[in-house]
Image: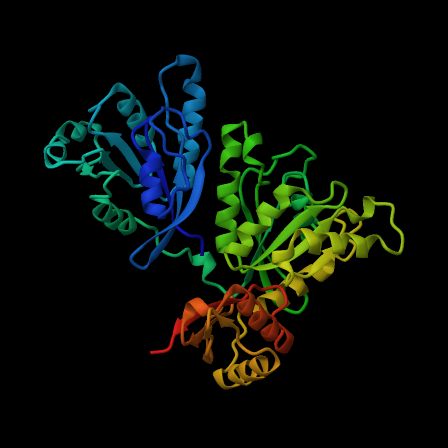
Length: 436
């Protein structure tokens, strides 16, 4: 299912990026004591206790100049629309301001849970100085300190208590797959061609699809699918409209809800740097992946065109060497009917389980073929392997010292698994653990 989404909202310079980095556990967002540093949304995954969630760091809602009121309201409404829970951040150092009240007025109109957090309460005296914020009407203010990390545990306890329950439509047996890619690669046209019906708006204007649209259908073999069309993901430097700034978040939410992701490329334009970044989202999420080259009918081709293009993809997407490539046309429907069956195959590989006894036979053969490395006088000893998860297939390898299991030997073990079992279309994770 889609991860719950938490948006951090507030006027500029109340510490949203600092809180974001604390929750995400990394310095992902730029932190500087200058209003307006965060101009685009930053996205990350957070975790508290057993709960994972998507986290949005937003730019400050500045209501200072009247000409920008409309844009500000649009920005706030998008944040409200995307989030399941909103953290409304204010600052104890400046106290209650007119800007805080304006932001509150925008948030009043939402049906989303709003949690009021008072940042920069670094000492006990400041934590007592929060009573004015009751006037905002969002219940008890929660004093926190982004710089020291105090109060964040209590805040996250409240946040996860507000998460929605699992969606009923995601509990079925349908294989869920999404189409992601840059704007104008033909994702909506592919959706329509697969369905044989105009279910979504198709336009040559970049960014026509603003939101994710789920469509269910049944293949001739009886397999049910749920297809998710997503808004095109733009390069951050080219994001101008407020409504475009959430395209990445919507696509990432679609990836979270997908079993398999179709990474759509434009044959006319070739491979762009942004294509690799987009595919990286799905790879890092551990989803099954199929690379789909659309608009193949528009090229002048010879006997080497397809192989040359495939070689280029393998060079540019080296981390996706496991992903099958299919060349299609939404206009002529060339090879298009093969996609659902390919999605089904990749999904089956994603949920494949291998018995431990069989795994350890493969492990013994692998070590006989290539002995374990000797690192600084210490030889890696691999004792046994077991599968602990699916989606993606995840294997724990018990060793004498996890630091000795270098990436290159992990890669070798993964290749041995792929040569023995069909894991086409799915990443494989190996986790080294010390044998007790």
